[in-house]
Image 1 (cartoon, rainbow, N blue to C red):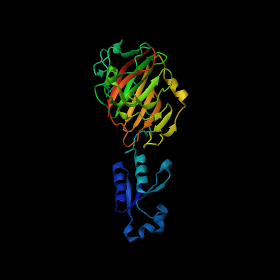
Image 2 (cartoon, one colour):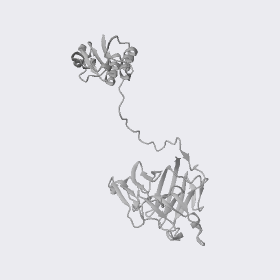
Image 3 (cartoon, rainbow, N blue to C red):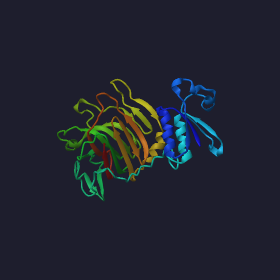
Image 4 (tube, rainbow, N blue to C red):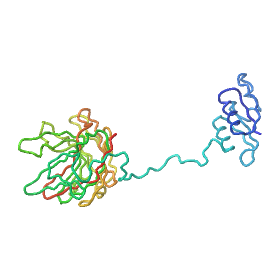
Amino acid sequence: MIELYTWGTPNGRKVSIMLEECGLPYNIHKINIGTNIEQFTADYLKINPNGKIPAIVDPDGPEGAPISLMESGAILVYLAEKSGKFLPRAGGARYVEADPINFNDHAGWTQMFDGVSLKGWDGPTPLWHVEDGAIVVQSKADPPTGSVYLLYTGSEPKDFEFKFEVKLEGASANSGVQFRATRLGEVPDRPQSKWETRGYQADFDNGNANVGALIECCSGASRNGVRPRPDRAKAGQIVRAAVADGEMPKLLSEFSDAATLTKAYKPGAWNQMHLVARGRTMMFFINGVLMSVFIDDHPTKFLPQGVLSIQLEGRGDNKASFRNLWMKNY
């Protein structure tokens, strides 16, 4: 029989209610704390040296030995464990391991390419075309093709994730994804300039010049009197953009060696790309490896929303193929 020492306070009632709910037999001993005497008697202080209520004495405690307990929270846990009620049957882990991302899990994502046409895209055709279930563009050395862009027309994403696969062929092939970008407008006698944009860019190339970098780029550097900022998060870096003219961007951390990270990119083979843009923070992954993080806190030059485009740069005979393009907007 459990001996309960209590008074009619909220903490005291908790224990008596718990005893009833657990179905444990008990006797009540009233300790009138209002007198400021009963809780300080020598006999009671042997049970609870703090001179407070509630307290219990269980003559049949752990392994059959008597036990005294004080503090309502500790008593409630003890009674739950003793009765086998009001606690999980098996203790759950305080933390759980995160599941690895499944690149091919598209639940909640929007398909951007139907595999057979350029519906939802705008760019110079037939340079951009569909070939073997992929969006393809080829450039030539003679005459030089120059940089070519293909713009997504389904939306101008703000906070989003973009997943796709890409294969670059050609030693000088250089490509990337422009996002939150601005269309610069057509320049006379340059018909391809109609699709040129400037904004943030996730970069990759077969020459390993800028693989995994997040930058501001590219076309029309001298147009409209505004040049892209030189701030860059290279592979292995977390960088905060300069927040005022004349200041330098800040390197917050180098989380890995660039030479090691860029080995994740496979020239001439299909690569899985994952771009995350949430607020002022942007993250770029290649084949499941975090390459760079760029944080743009500039009060006026931060780009919150805009055009998304894929592109091919570089001199020479090169080819870029894109497939499995998906977006999730937030």
